[in-house]
Image (cartoon, rainbow over all chains, first blue to last red; front, side):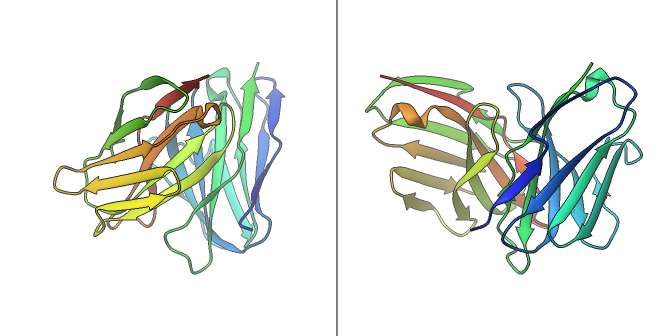
Length: 116
Length: 112
């Protein structure tokens, strides 16, 4: 149980285009999902917290107009990187917190984004 | 919030040896968690220790927490080549809404 999937696992896009990444909780409902970013050989940095049915809360320094987050259902959150640039190339990981379980987060397998 | 620091940054040991990784953090916490990440993959939750706990075991894993020093350690006993991965601590800070702050990570390599 407690499986989180991400799609796509890898994506290459051209500079200036937009890319959407999906995060799904497969066997539980997630009231909260988190989006992280990880550069090579570095740690995870929280980008934003996504609550079902409400606006995402972004961490300091993360541009909300560039990284659009939508959490339209209890099992799906999406991150759209708009007008991508090479410096947006990174590993994006989501996690999902099951409804009612405050201390638990389950992580997706990550999405490798490369912007050329 | 600032990231925690982990040391060592990299650790190379022989199979069968024990591996110890340390994590320090800066703020008061509700709990501290350890995660494992294989190269290019997502995170696997290993163990959670609450702020009122001092030690916890899970299989070959032993975690300690010293809130007075704001530090934690992860011990992997009788290591195996399959334990090769990066290990991260993550703190759930008080008042932080269950947002995790990750440490810088330790890259563990277990050689045959």
